[in-house]
Length: 149
Length: 67
Image (cartoon, rainbow over all chains, first blue to last red; front, side, top):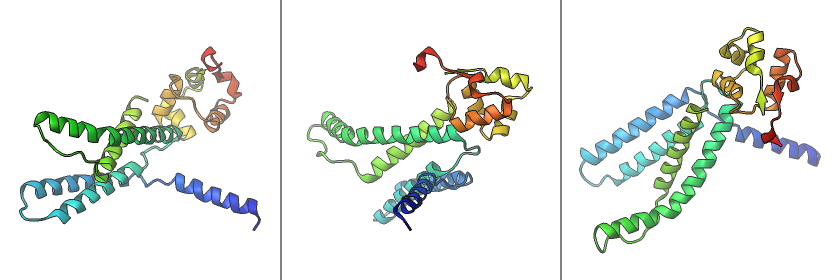
């Protein structure tokens, strides 16, 4: 196999990877997982007692997986415009997510110390908070971009 | 870029939905193209050209903004 063939093969594989989307029915699957994870979190917060940190962590991961499935699901009618809008929504989510991760710790620290003196110590955001925010922004912007197209 | 797809569609007596199905896109995409909110790809423009049986230049025109 010559170099050109190898490059073409890699290019095709890369394009296939970039274009990967789940079928439309996975939108409902993702939504169900998200709703169940949120319900689980509510039960964990208000109904369960004792040290159940593992459950909290598991539900957080399940929530992110559900949102990722929703994000990767195709539309009913998938065309070049929806692909372009989805790309825009990912770009916006990435930029807003980075700004959020940079600014939000200072906002939390500032507000905490403003409300009561000697408030929380400065700490960075966790991965869950950043990923949840980015997925939420992506889904929200994609929905809005489609609505106003 | 501006276009006369609405006129071409009327000549063929097609609704937005029918045109969308013929070229494999959603009705909203046709609506956005007609309203000049979305510039279609070359592939889509050529599909329209084939359907209208006219060159692309006949129904897509550059405007001053594109200069």
